[in-house]
Length: 309
Image (tube, one colour):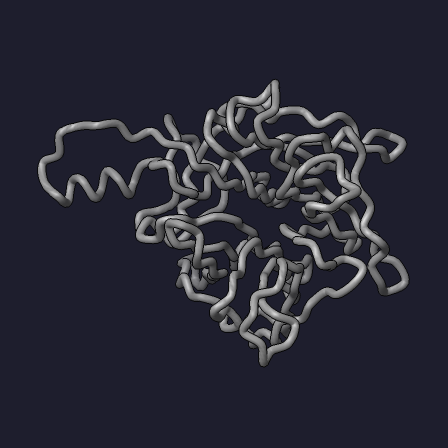
């Protein structure tokens, strides 16, 4: 059995992305704790650039940020230049690192200030230090007049995403769109080994498209709220029944937004777990430190060392 050890995602001062055993659960490093809600995470193949979402307490404001690694030190975070008065979240970096996918409600017409339904968008660049292009909508058949969320791609560019559609099995479901002849095919609803009459969302697809990690909400075999599940393909290329990833990855709180760094065998995910309890504080500094540096019920990113491939 794989032993899973929760470790801190020490993003700004991390000297190595190797998992470190911790006796307990800790969340983001101190500098990013000034941001109340931090969610979604993806990292480049060279582990020198990472993207994530910063949100206001009510999630009314949602922007994508980046940190970059230079000489073994992380610098940032900085908001991406295309983030404006609309909602931006759920970044996913392409295999070559030159295309960033995300979800947004920005309008198709740049002159408009009216929010659209959520679509999948992307920006391009020539190399790591080049400027990003203006956002481009993926268009049909991926996008529609419904909400599309959480894009994730395998190395062959096949796309998986979340959508709430009339042909779905439940409220939110996971769909697949195949990349062929330079175009995406009509989205296909994944079968009942993945989807159900409940909620399935925020899927991560592996490079070789052989396993899928996603959230199922309030399942009978769950630990409470949303849990991470994993499904692997059988020898015939069919998805097997998804299984709960168990403790300590899951908790009685919400776990969502998975990303697996296959090179370093690290699973990143967002959790709203809480461990703080009432206590007597020495002063206001002690109070602030305790609230900020412990799981406090707000969205934070965690990491666990686990071999999945």
